[in-house]
Image (cartoon, rainbow, N blue to C red; front, side, top):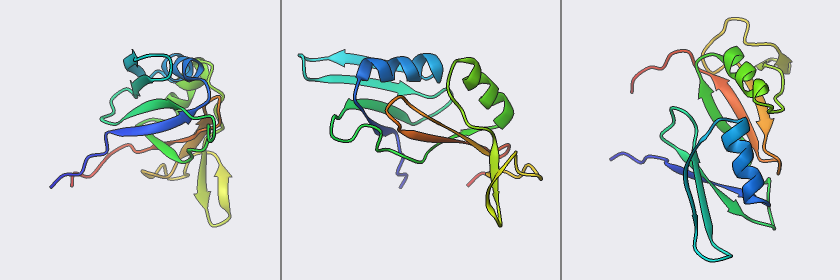
Length: 137
């Protein structure tokens, strides 16, 4: 039995601002933007190459409360350059060692070892993680 994760709800204060950020600055594809009256709107976006999408939900009680979402890329430097070039405020590349978070990519460029981060305008936090090769399961 497969249990596939296909949708994550991202709480935001302004759906239009978030849609613009994710589509223009992060490069997600807009799958759906549907309104049914003034109080109901579904905006679904999908990262390039992903089987999992996000839905933006207006939530004035907890916008920006989602942390630790991961996007996986095969080239951390190229991904960081692309997002920075689109105007996204991104951190430097970092890795973890015995002393904690350390600047720069993993010295051995091991899969799952190098990261950078960014946040949307409400503060929802994302990590971009480098995985150059995957083992089939």
